[in-house]
Length: 330
Image (cartoon, rainbow, N blue to C red; front, top):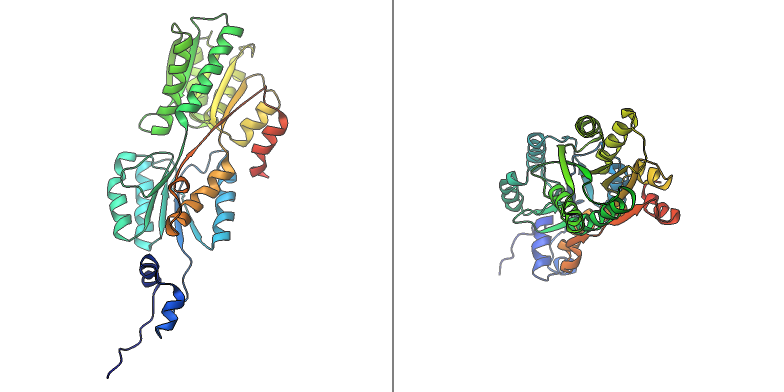
């Protein structure tokens, strides 16, 4: 009776066997030589390297990847949707096991999802939900906006005499996380102060926010409140107020993310920047690596479809609590 020729077992063979419930030990018992499993490659398409929180986020992600034995491909595309797509396509040509993507153009992701799945890799959404995703990490943006809106309404009532206040929004289009943050904040303010006046400008980062806030203040010099869709934008709004010659009395600038400089300014009771809707940046960095791990190892949906909560950090927040959030930047 003839015997079949031995063959090497590749990583893909092992994955298939694992899915069928065959242990690696069983492979050895079959008399097949086992090729050492290569390190998994996770492509992390987070393009905003200029964001103040980015290094803390990346430190946590890289530490978790090292613990799991994974390699991480980092993004250098910048905030250009076309460059992001080009970078992802380059990674697809090189091959990876999972793609985590903060999509700058969510509508352009459908072909990417299909290509990722053709390669038997995972597609994981970051911040936005993308149809066909295998898992996601998203923020509880509308809950955060409701909290910030209520805080802002309280500020208007206590510091600005109630109704009729002018509120500036620094926002952006076509980014789900931004829309959810700003619209829920607006809704919460209007629920308590329906005669509030809102004025919008487009800005995500500090340089654009500086220019946008300068324009808002020129048109509305009595404006005391600017709600920014990012903490980086809040830094630009702060600079605009400082450069305007207008006093800081009762000014409220707020942003979202939990960036280091913003948290330090809030902790120092900065007269302009009073609120950061803070995410646990360290936990998010760990999660973007843990979600693929959980998917590969049959983890529960609660660990693969993650909704991250915010903490409202203000001048009233205890310094020790702010230090805990800041610890990821150490």
